[in-house]
Length: 172
Image (cartoon, rainbow, N blue to C red):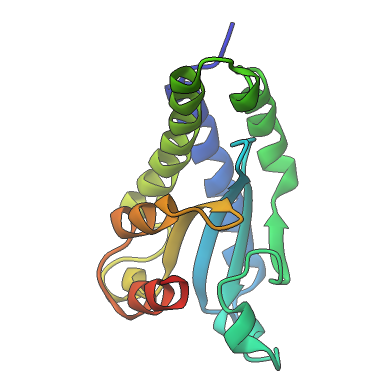
């Protein structure tokens, strides 16, 4: 049976919650400002990366890597939780194996919506903080390398504030 969008979103919500909970618990002296689910243009099952102000302050190239999922010491976290989610994504038709462009685009969009749904649920639960604390954490779903829709997703997932503004300025 092919997993539905709801199946992907549910599994990803559970997995990402576990990853972020472990990340925050295992790094109590860190103030995280960036948590992202990333996927390549094929929209394979995502990976989770994060940055904290404390780790960024250790980098001489901080301005360059501030929003780089790959350069973070918290890159590709929680594989034990996300591997089963990737298997669900892999059970669906591969985006670029679908001959019809509209159907291929629809599959891509379905996968990104599932990722966005999961991050929105976690945000609504307060996992990334509430009020001012939440405004200090940029929560993203990113297609890498850069995809113009990343900006729209960032605006949908985050409250207005300095972190979102800084990220938008960084990419625009």
